[in-house]
Image 1 (tube, helix red, strand yellow):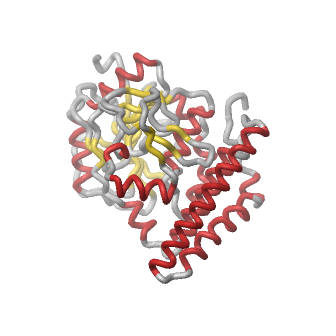
Image 2 (tube, helix red, strand yellow):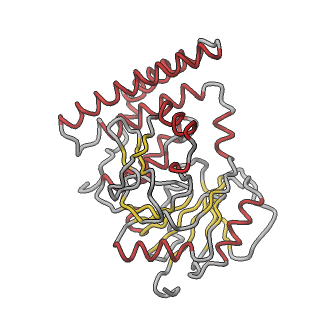
Length: 331
């Protein structure tokens, strides 16, 4: 595969804080067997550019926000394909070529490498993920990567190997898109998530919106991408004293938007998802109660309760009602 066979550009969102990890990413982009036409760095307003230049990157200043810095018109991009990156990803020399071959062969709208590797987690990490978000490993390979469940949690294959699988979600730090498919899902409609203070779950929202609107998503388990984890946004979240409340609020709103208010759902779908959500809430309350007892801090359970309440309040607000429906096809 040559550059003319697969013309693509790169769009990187950054706050300008990733430092050496960002430098490593830029170096790896310049080593690709298929070279990008342009490397565009979308940096948030008020943030300083890194003090180094690798050579081909071009900076574009945009409004700050995890969703906002990705939900762009990309008028600077003239290529039909677009590689979306965070600022802390290292690519193997043929990384883009691996994704591109899978995209072309399987006629997909988006291909994302597996960079978080939940299947490689220890038993303790797997248990923690299940207790806190009901992330569930699947013992048998059914040809799917990540599946979104009715309670808005996800499941994943325990032994995926190096295959390329259909998926309903993916890891957010890196993904290769057909530009038209990305623009068609109107990601800017989801910028409400940025207004809540931290865009928890925005990756799932992006990929799931593609799938629910008829797009094709693949996860490549053998692409060789590495997440260097600069933690620039996670530090902001960890510093919030009410992060447990915020997390519960957003979990509720993601479930509400995708599993209750989406226009492609039947009454039966909505009823089943309410049952699944009820079970998730009971489990979540039990986990937060145990954590509150362990830490001797009643505020932990209060934040869980307040997050649910504030999520419901926001879902009844005029601001939420004015958000266009999650299903955009045919609009």
